[in-house]
Amino acid sequence: ASTGGGDGINDTSSLTGIYKETISVNDPVYSIWVPAVSFDILDDPATLPMININSHDADANNTTISLTSTTSPYLATYKRVGDTFTRLTMPTMNRYGYSSALNSTGNLVVLPHSLSPYITIFYRSGDSFVAYGAGTPSVTPTSVGYACKYSNDDAYFVIGNGSSPFISIYKGFTKLANPSTLPPGASWSVSWSSDDIYLVIGSSVSPYLTIYKRSGDTFTKLANPATLPPGAIWGQEFS
Image (cartoon, rainbow, N blue to C red; front, side, top):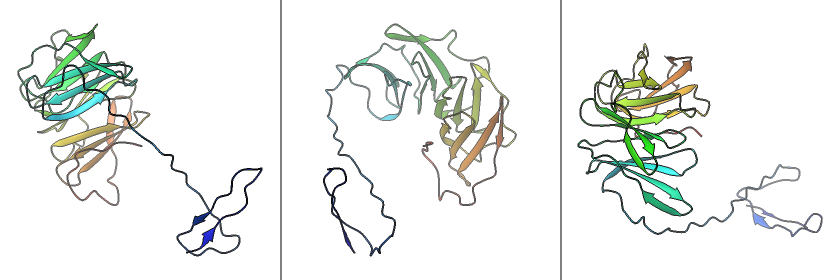
């Protein structure tokens, strides 16, 4: 290892450090600064959520969050004002969910759940969520949903299902035709690219990763990556 350092530039302080390898004159040297970060633990909400939280989601402004559980009441939502989280009123549920999805404004939440019709949609009215219309789209998923996510522009939401066709894609509240190539098995996770062009599904069956490219309302599977994940995917996200 080599020791590096020197005089400051324009009256700045000098920097001295230990390099991980020997360097020579004119070798490029890069410095990465990692600022110190600290987190404060906030007070618990006045009303705590149920136990066994399976997933959570937040709106674009991080002012509304949703939590799902296999323990009654199965779905909880909170609003954030400053550092205070207040639980919102939800209808009584008799079925559990593994995932929920909030739209970007936090006024709609989609809950895929364990019993037919396997989906309920709620909208926010003040500090309460109520079922949106009948609470279900005209065409519903055919099996339990393990994952759910709105597109960034709120135009679509997708559910990863436990049984074939393993995926349910909605535009607004209208179910779209299934992609011509389906995920290989139960879909445990879903994610959108920032421009909503790419949709990634994580599955329990090889090749474990299914990538779709959207053109209009059509989702076309892309070729698998040259190197596949080693096993079932429980979660993934775009950078």
